[in-house]
Image 1 (spheres, rainbow, N blue to C red):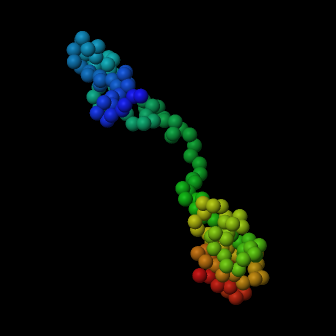
Image 2 (cartoon, one colour):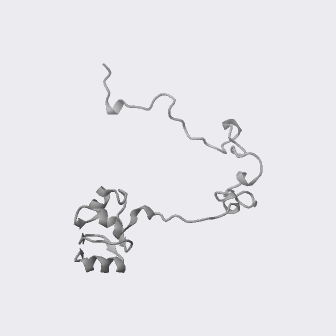
Amino acid sequence: MLEIRLNSLSPAEGSKFSRRRVGRGIGSGFGKTAGRGHKGQKSRSGGFHKVGFEGGQMPLQRRLPKRGFRQLDEHLYAQISLSDLQKLLTEEVDLQVLKAAGLIKNGVKFVKLIKSGAVSRKFVLKGISVSAGARSAIEEIGGSIL
């Protein structure tokens, strides 16, 4: 059986290459122009342009029409209506209850209740923001918002 010790470990044969030493004479294979070819922007020091530059031609990202915007945290927010609330079987409502009922997606972190529809039972809302109209509808029936 092979015995492996930390002091005898080495990289596999052929897996490591010595770095290319350019500009060290004709015998190295990378003398004179140092592998950069002749003339041109890329042959000179500092001769690189920004990403997307097309030699002065109008770049692709500027030629294409711009349209719309998607908010990065869009999936964190959701809204439910009073009629959605009416479908729930429990009296105490929070994020977990809404997720379990399938009214909001799993990734949602903030929910707002809006006044759309009507409620006939009282509810206790925890950790849910409420519009002014929905607040009056909930409190009118005897519910509360914590």
